[in-house]
Length: 441
Image (tube, rainbow, N blue to C red; front, top):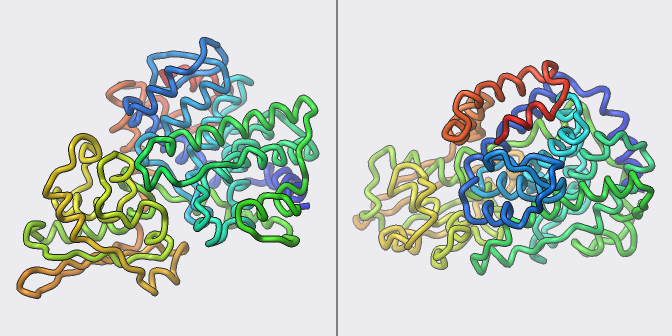
């Protein structure tokens, strides 16, 4: 059974993780924290903090030192990580693993006073669990049905990370993963309607996976065939029946090493189009002179809910998802300015977005998800055109993640930002994760 095999492989690989993989987990942790501080004032982040109880189990990050019960803190922190849409992305699974794995791992690590290296190891395992389940479940039909990958596969990542830190054996971990499958949920109608439940979906997944592992510790059981069973995840979400092979966890290609970091606070599938538009803007393209713009991208980007949208741009999430808006805003300002997402829609941006079209580029489609290519072409009234193609790699580097953390966290933490970075980059110096969490006020 798939989840039994996954539990066994996670257990076997845990002590063999390389220092490079652990370091990447630290980069993912810094990126998630950066996003949480950057998103702390967004309405949905404030709403999640408001409904938190008055417990004292875990820190709510970027909240002035507030603490809460474990599950409420995890929920609030996950919402904050997702609040700007600037979080990390695993393209193959179409999941934002940092939003579902890291809040759970850090909260449990804080509660148990776990050494930071163990928390980073748990994060690696959580990312891997997400990717392995997605690999046998994610299909084009899954997307067409309207399911959201992050909130369907996310519970498995939170459960795996929590189970590791709790010290669950392979049997109990398999039960936790089985229960996580029953928490898989989340549809993408928000992308059509412009509503805000998108920001809470991953938080629900994070909380559910953590609770699944806690229940498994107490003896609760979950279906070992929750993936491939006749009424399991593959059938329910993708309409696929039949057996699946064993998971294939490879030390030389862990999911966390193929996770990328967004350069822009926008949907992951818009990143390359933004990069191409930035190049055009740098060439001096006058947006008012553009008669028509075309985004050539992968089918995954063109067909994802909300991405091909040039007209319904009244709400922040509709703008953050839209390829047309991303290109129009970048051509107009030279960069993608987050403040463009809120307030009344600029008439010039609205007009340019309406003149922008999305088409599937066969070459980009074939390359996805190994490569995420996009090309933007603009046509002028005189018939002339200009085009730019996204660069080979728009993934933020570890150094850029540090700068991102400074940008978002310095206004709140001041000099403590540097101390947090030093701790994460030298995790063996932190034998109690509660000490790190205490700085995340």
